[in-house]
Length: 276
Image 1: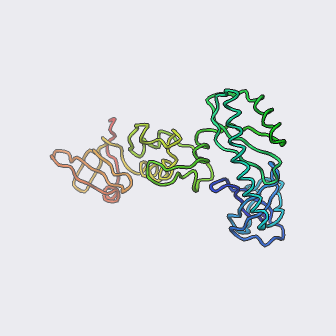
Image 2 (image 1 turned 180 degrees about the vertical axis):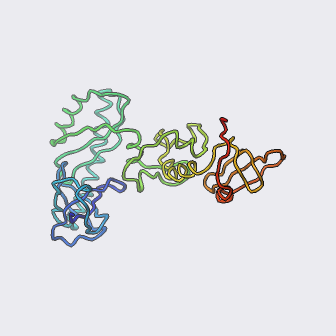
Image 3 (image 1 turned 30 degrees about the vertical axis):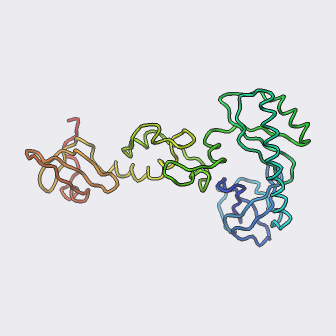
């Protein structure tokens, strides 16, 4: 087991584990750590805890120190410098007529590197752009191409639900989302209704997916003949989350509703498949 604290470098960024050493780090403290990108300023989102070897990337880097007021001023200065760098880079992109969209600019805490995030439909030859930027900023330059989901995470916005985007407020990682999830939840397959601001399938399709999959395993399919307290009938509708079935009774011109528990009391859910 390893003693660690979880550090985030962005509001809804991924959590990275660091060795707190003997520092009295508490949740929400700001700290200075050394990463593969250089010295960085982050916030502790967990207090000191123990995790297994499979949960950390070894060797575990140590927290350099707890951040002070001067460090916070440096962060503010870096943000202001990043805004100026954005304007300059945008001018250079237009000057070189590159087919790329500049999304954000970020300085590392120690100003050892400036990172330019952009989106593009394909590969972009930005070698001349890098030369121009290096001559202006006199530091290491990194141009990083990101996807549309990462762009939405950085820029933020309001989703179709009227709330701030999940990815920009609390989602640390993007989970895979498939059209099957929308089908399982009986949602409209109209792309405009199941897509987020990024144009990809909405992340929230994943939230209730496990519950729907469990319910579908327990419930019969539409068209199956099942045993009910009032005799056999054909399933004509399902309320998946509440485990309720609409059943057309055999030989009767009526549709009744039954819960899964009521049907299970009859000994079996299905007595005849819809393909039989």
